[in-house]
Image 1 (spheres, rainbow, N blue to C red):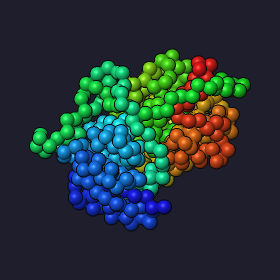
Image 2: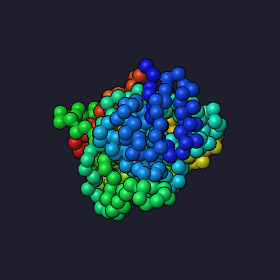
Image 3: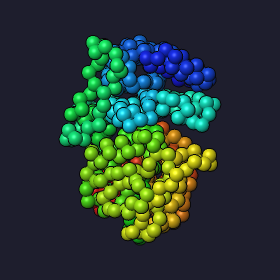
Image 4: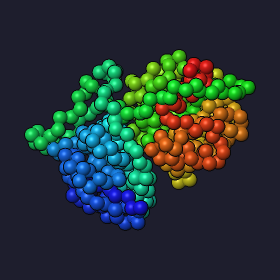
Length: 386
C-alpha cells in the first residue's frame, strides 16, 4: 500500500525538492503541500495523509503550533525538518514534545556525505514512520516544572507581526505527548546471581520521548550509573541532556571525556562521536572519541558503547533497547548477553519504529519485551525499588 505524504514548508523550492524525492520512491506519494501551519491543518483534515513532513519556522503559524493542533485533532506521524543549531535543537525538541515522531536536518548535506545517500535516508525515514499506525494525541496538560526548566524558543520568522502565531511562552514548559498509563499488574522479579552495577540504554527514532518516559520515573537515589546512546546530531545532544536534567529526579548530562560514572547520574553520548566505558565497576570512566571513519553508520553507536560496557562490567549490566530504525545495538547486546547480562527490548506496539528492538528480539537476545510505559517499573523492580 502506498504511503500518502503531505509536505509543509514556506519555501516553494524546498516543497518541490522534497516532493520530487519522495515521489521517486515506489512506496511514497505526495498528495498535497502547504506553505504554513494553518494551511497544513486544513490540508490534513481534507487529505488525511499517512505522514507529514513539517518545517519549524513558517509564517502565519509555525510548525510547533501546527503539530499541537494536528496531534489534538487528527493524530498523524510527523517528521520535522530542523536546522543543526542550538536554537534549532531547542525548537525540534519542542516539536517532539508536541507530538512529532522524528526529525531530519533541513540541509541535505547534513544528512549524509552525498546527495544519493541523503535521498535514501529521507525516503526510508518517511516510509518507516508512515507504516506506524495508532499515533496518540499529546496530553493537554503541561509538565509541572519550574520556569527555569523550559527551553521553548520562538519559531516565527521575521514576517509582519500580524501574521505570526504567538510563540510558546518561555515561562511555561511544552506540553507532553500522552503515554498510556503503566500497567498495574505485578512485575516479575529478576533472577540473577550477580548484582546489576550499570544500566545501559540505546535508542534512535522515537527515542527522545521514550527516554523521557523512562528517565522521569526514576528516583534521585537510583543505585547505579546510566549510560544513554541516542542517535542524534551533535548540535542536539547537549540541549536534550539539559532538557532531561530539568525534568528528571536523577542527574542527566551530555557525557564528557573523563567523566567518572556515578550512581543516580545518566550520561548521554554526544552526537557525532563515540562513547566508550573503561576501567572497572565502581571507578569506571567515559572516553569520548572523535569518529571520522566511514565504517560506522551511527555516531554515536549503541554497539560500540555496549561492547565497551561488556568489557568493563561483564554481566553486571541491565541493557535496554528502545524504539529505533535499523539494528544498531544487536551485536553490543549479544556481547553483553554472552557475559551474563540481562537484556530487555521495547515491545512492537509502543515503538515508533520497531527496528532496533526487533533486531534484538529476533536474535533471541532479549529476555523481556516491554511496553514503553512499563519499562521504568521493570527497571525499578530489578533493583527492588518497584
